[in-house]
Image (tube, rainbow, N blue to C red; front, side):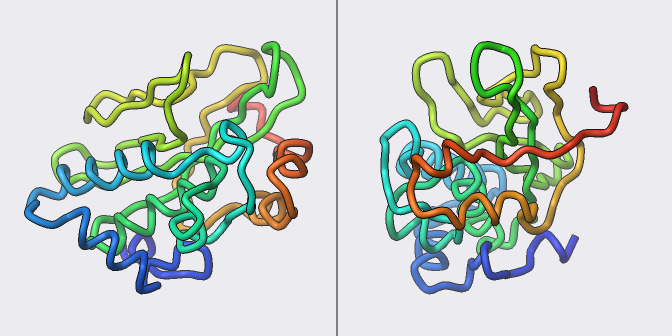
Length: 194
């Protein structure tokens, strides 16, 4: 479980602002589930999704997403993992492979999280940000993710990553939200996920 508590370049929970925000969100709470809910709702509701709001700069590190109050789903998942880890709650990164438009190829990865809750085990949650047609909620043990798998070629990838997938880091090295949107990361999936 220690790997899901580690600090890293992109999940930089020891950055003073991230650590302070994590402690602030947990203030007065003792139940890890309630702390996880507070962290989730903060990232979902207060950090704007870069594409929805047409916002720059492109962020990748948790501390940058917090500082600029924006990020694609990937950066938002890095921030949520950092806030949870700063509160000693194991958290990882998960991915879905989704269609980009019109329920057909091309596909892209979508970033979300898994948190380890003692009562439920690993629980996936999606702080992407709600909007019309998207309503992600925190209600363990029931998953209420932003997107469901509905089209051939889409997949829920089962891995829980301790660190971001390299394709995500590459995409988030681009300079503008539009460049990222034009180059959303995708990966080949094994036939068992299709």
